[in-house]
Length: 494
Image (tube, rainbow, N blue to C red; front, side, top):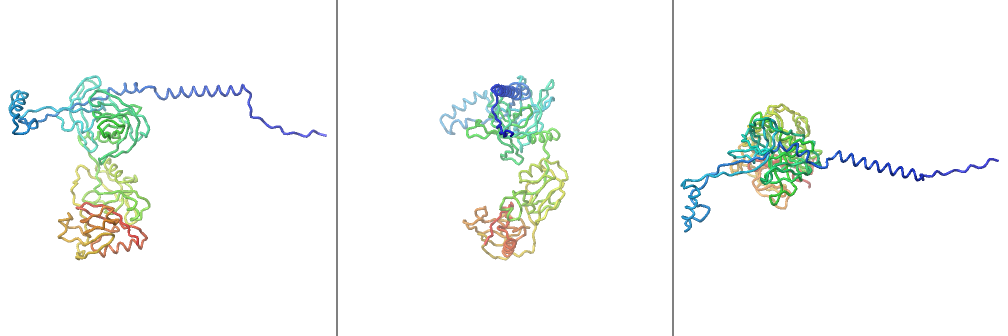
């Protein structure tokens, strides 16, 4: 009889020597990892600072300010001390009886971008200056001349004549900078001389107040006097120009802004070539497509740029119309108006680009030859040609929380409407209505509803009925106030 087989259970317990071996290997791996990290990240930023600091400069400007005659501003006129202070001023003016001139100085920063002496700084640092002095890290000083400025991005390009090639830095790709990346700011804070501070990229694509803003936000210390100085990445490339700070007290609180290098580089290239900027111009007035506007137009999502007016210019010649939604420009999808303005401005003057618009629920692609933004007349009339035979009946009606009456010739001059504009004038707004909440006020003129012209109350009633029949919850109105257009979506649910 064969003995019955008994199953043998396997154990996971290792001999003591194997456990010690495993612990030793883990310890070695930890030490190796720490060594790799030490080599990957330098213990000090000093080597990088030493490498790039010779290209950073201090900028001093001086402006001659005309003095005043007499002791005005010191004592009130007619004061018994007036003669005394006049004599005191005359002595300080070396006995000259005429107005004295004095020099006003300002400090800023900048950086050299080529060995032949081109220097980048902020426009506000050198604006109105009679003389500009550039002081280098070595202590040498040179007089600079202005090659060109761009107030829109607050960038200025200077040139100095040096006896030998200058150390310089290159622009990096600001689009590659990530939130959390280390950065170094250099400059002349508060006039104290060369200084360096470190921090991280706190945010990207910040907008302050300009049309072409694309700021990098950083917590690297930036103070007055740092304006125009460079923001470096860890490769020593300039990814921003330090321009502004957000502070309640004028000092650094860790919220600084640097204009992105990809914007600056395009501006500098144009200033170097032309002495001025040459931005593309589409020639439309636009507004963002909000969710309520998207719902009123039957759009799948709130994206694109809604055209509110097409004055004379490239867009009008190409066939773009008020009410079109620009979905893509030169093959790039348009997220909002800010993105479109920046993309158009970065395009070459005279370039022929394809613009895809949504019109009456269908997409169309039009070819537009861009003009030049700087040559555009910003005061172009905002007229919308309509049917000249539209009736001007003196009727009054209340719809959508608005009291309305057709626009008459007598009202045009008072409301700032041109001769071609037709529509309904808002004579009163119910303050508890959605229309009031969305900003409609007495004197506004409704020229379109549902992207169709309206000249009578009956026209507006028809547009409301059509939108309700289509199952829409709101109606898109084109409002003009003093000639300026904008779209507003108003709810029409029963």
